[in-house]
Image (cartoon, rainbow, N blue to C red; front, top):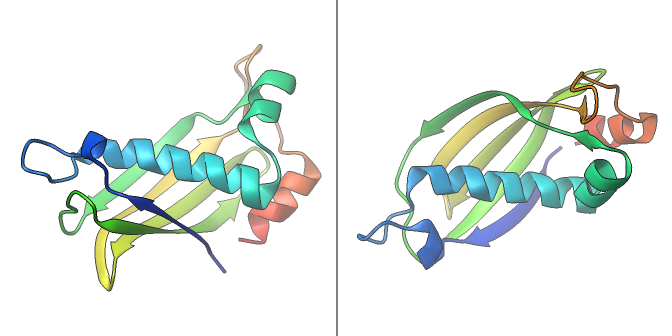
Length: 133
């Protein structure tokens, strides 16, 4: 099972040739992950960060670029959870446009207490939602 959303490649994402500049994919991925937590998991970043004083820093990132994306391309983000651990989640995202894969990546995020800077377990209902994707 996976969760999907879309983003359009905008001018802000592109270099002078209208090609999406590679670090902009990471900004889009962060936005997609935040949207996923808000819409699917039901644990928005305001509650997570401001109320619960927890964050989800990146512990691991593996990324592969398959083909370029261009200004105005409609990009599909297909997100699946490979593993939801006690305090971490490994997410796989495949970015495509039409039938063409543009980028694939795996990222591990660790939920951490922002005061102690130590990992902290997911709430049970959050882990259940993560495992359902």
